[in-house]
Every structure is written in structure tokens, then in C-alpha cells.
Length: 316
Ligand code: SER
Image 1 (tube, rainbow, N blue to C red):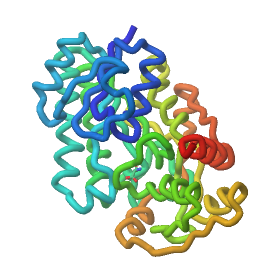
Image 2: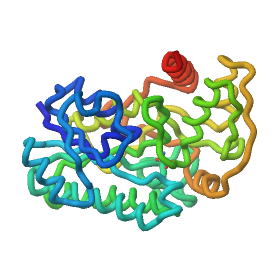
Image 3: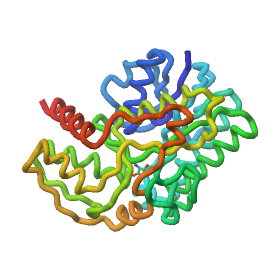
Image 4: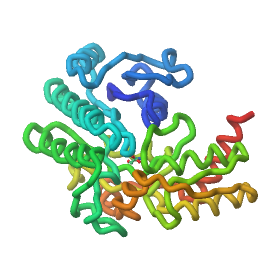
């Protein structure tokens, strides 16, 4: 049975990944490392927790030693738009946590998952059906840390056999913990407004296409890549994965099938728009499909229905 440490377990992905991993591997085998609130419900009761500043390598090492950890999910990151406002923080968290995790993994023989992102691409990258192996010249500090993360993770595998694996996540749509300052956040925020019967002011222009994924698929990707048969992996850091690609108008139309009176206007955020314009419209995830049987389950229609049903339930 794996013994897992999650760094960043109170964030958008971590708060749900911890539940998923505990349901698979047993609650006592998944240690939730936390740095900042908000703490999800029952956070301290649901299994082992440890306060960890991912920028302090010794803190990670002592938890890895204490629990005999063999797998680290390193989810610490400052998302794209926030990192552009504070590039030093974006760099320090993105690179610092990664290097500490890799060095601890080297010492204690752990596997490491550190998500990459569609942000690892840039304006020179082919925009449609973006290939697995292609030009990566991101223009954000977030994207630069992700490319560095991909390269150095492969380096640790090639030189020291550290089992590093990763996926390039698109925008993740979820309803437990909100994302914190990403370019794709609009696709989450719109649902909260829709369910309250309020108008949504969209920060991105109509026609801005980006890849997106519903959280259950993102969790499957994070689990399945780490369970994949290593002998079948040609790539490691990091696999393109996607589930859907849409623009604000398509999302609006889908929500309106459930809430016909829902209104949206536009007030473009120049920073987010410029970041979105530099990212792909849609990824080609055939390498993930071929090498570890990646397959998403939710599309725009089923994700929208499920998001609205879940948020309605929470409103009661
Ligand atoms: N969701 C992230 C962001 O928008 C992209 O990986 O920053």
C-alpha cells in the first residue's frame, strides 16, 4: 500500500485529492500537509495532518521520515494571474517546493507528482490540438516554473531514477474549494453566480478557447498516472490531458439550458486576457491515452449538469 504525503492539501485540487486518495489507499496512509486555511470540513479528523512550509526542506523530510512516505503529491503553487502580480512569490513557491520535494524524494526514494499546466505553453506553441512534444516558451512566471518543473523532474528520473510523473492540467472546474487566482477561474466563478441568480461579469472575451476538466477527471488523472505501468511510459513530465475545450459563450449557452434567465456581460481583465491568449485552444492528449489509458469522463454538458446539481444541493 502506498504511503502518501500531499503538499498543499487545502487548495482546490488538494482538498478533493486527499479524499480520493484516502478512499483508495486508506485514511491513515495519506498525510495531508497544510500551510494555509481555509481548512475543508473535518480536515483535522479525517486522517493524519502535518503543518508543512514547502519552502523548508527539513519540514518535508521529517514528515516523510515519520510516516515512511513513498509518494509525494506536490500541489503547492501560485496560479498564473496571481503569480504575474507577484512574480517573486510565484517563482519561490513554484520552484522552491518542487526542488525541496525532489531532493527529499531522492534521499528517501519517493515517487513525485507535481502538476504541470496548459500554462507551460506559450504564443509560439501550435494553438489547436497542441501536440505532446512541441515548442514551450511560456510568457508567465507560472508557466516558466512549470516548464522548469517538467525538465528538472525528467532530469531527476534520468540521472537518479526518481519516479517523477506528471500531467499538464487544463483549467479545473470544481465545487468544494475555489481556485486561487488562475486565468481559468472564470469557468468556476460563473457557476456560483448562476446558482445565486446573479449576473456574471466575464473577464475574458467571447471566443477565448481554453482546455478545461471537471475535478473527478482531474483526480483520476492524478491517481492513474502514478499507478501506470512504468514500462509503458515513453513520456513522464508531463502528459497533455484534457476533457473539453470551450469559450465563455459556449459555457453560458450550456448553463442557460438549465437556467434560461442567467445573464452574462463582459468586462475584460487585460492581464487574464493576455495570459489566455498565449495558451492553447485545445490539447492533443493522445500520448496519455496510448501510454497509460487516460480517458476523461465528463464533457461540457455532463460537467455543467453535475456542477449545478452539486451547488444546488449545497445551497439547501
Ligand atoms: N488553472 C491554472 C491557471 O489558470 C492553469 O493551470 O492559472
